[in-house]
Length: 189
Image: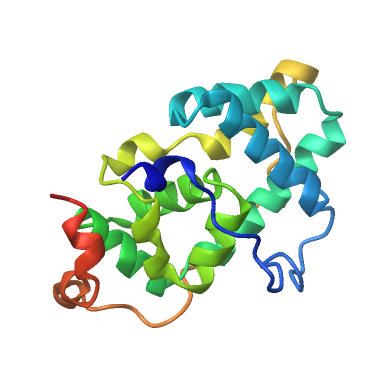
């Protein structure tokens, strides 16, 4: 099971989920993902430590870049916010409320570009890196930019243009989620 923790997916060759978004002022994608990857590398896979590391890294950016990071982050959460993905998170944890799914999406981004992009396209790939854990513990990554901005400027991050979108797609049948995704459900055991 070592591959589930340390190995990354191959580079994603497809179109970025950020392309075609109508959100302006996004952080340059390579810069965004380099911050995520560096925070993860420094944290050595510990999610709580990754939150601190990402906040520290963002404090080294200019205020406008922190805002751009949060815009890109919000756009990626919106891209992940699809019932197809929620169904996989539901199977993985044998249940998943709307708040917990949101936390799951933010944790998902924290796993890095290749894992995020590949598994957005093929959600069943979550089997290779998702963990059965309390999704409540996944909350936090979305607050790093706000904390960094406040630490740097003494002011709260302006939030008027960070809207989370409604869940896309067709709602799934909760009773069938575990049957449709048995490999994810078995990770719970």
